[in-house]
Length: 224
Image (cartoon, rainbow, N blue to C red):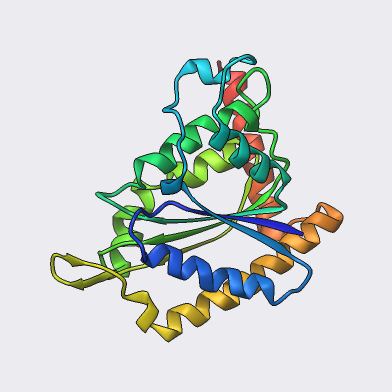
């Protein structure tokens, strides 16, 4: 079983990367799993433009490597801070560029086949802000993944990731309850990915969401 963990933060160390590390340790508990952890800040990815959809377009070495890891992974974990109500630009750029390999040739149908994703977000605001606002402002991340044919198995938000008011830095390493929760979530996620890789089956909730999403897409296409 192969899992790709994609880190979108630019700080080192970072809260999102620290939570992702605990999540990965939980994945390892299942055994017989290979985890690739890649940081977008260390990769040179061309900004998206329509040429990226061309068959003969030179995608760049880093993008080709990331694409191969992505396509060969049985599951994908994305860990990202939330800056000014959105994810860092390099993550949005990669999501845009995913259309070159995660959509069919018409660019209207996702071809990820239900691949399981887990999203980890960190932010300076309290948890209530996630429910009230930030879940909406970052909704394009899970919605794009679903459009590409992926399945969102879980989403986690860690709030108050600041040392003090107006001071940013690593704090989650001093929150054992959060790290332990991530480890447990990682193990549960690994069980889902293992089942999906062996049988193609998703949990009932994700299967129902997937069917409803495809139904909604069909209705929209008929309305055009």
